[in-house]
Length: 202
Image (cartoon, rainbow, N blue to C red):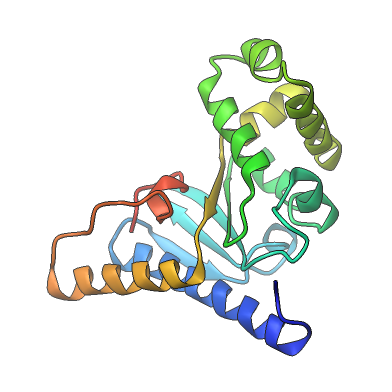
């Protein structure tokens, strides 16, 4: 459970800074062209940073944890995480959410969208389960300017990562060691950047 008040805020800020450091390593390794932190204007609302990778903007939102349990789609909408993504995704950008608390419902929708060969297949086969369709419809209401097919395509540009702060710190240390010493990279784990980002691991 998060600590109340100031300690909780400090812990959350620490996690966000670590994830930004991870993104910076991505830049230093040459796998991203630019990194901007706290982008001003409407595009930057709800995101800590923006990476440019192969000419495509990648917007990152990090949340250390959630006291109320997993990040359901409803929680991500209610707590104003997902609504700001609409304009970024509509413009063809990518969005990444990372937390030490799981966001399996959003991850599942994104994974299903990438597995489907078309909107029709996604609609008929991958949204067949009532609970999955309900989550998709909740997402539709959060992105009212996007048609059904646009939400489906937008989900293909969404990545979700669940990683604890200790593991994140360890991964940062490993990557810095690789950059400085030229050591062979460690085998990727299920919680590293590569498993959840549209790009390769830094």
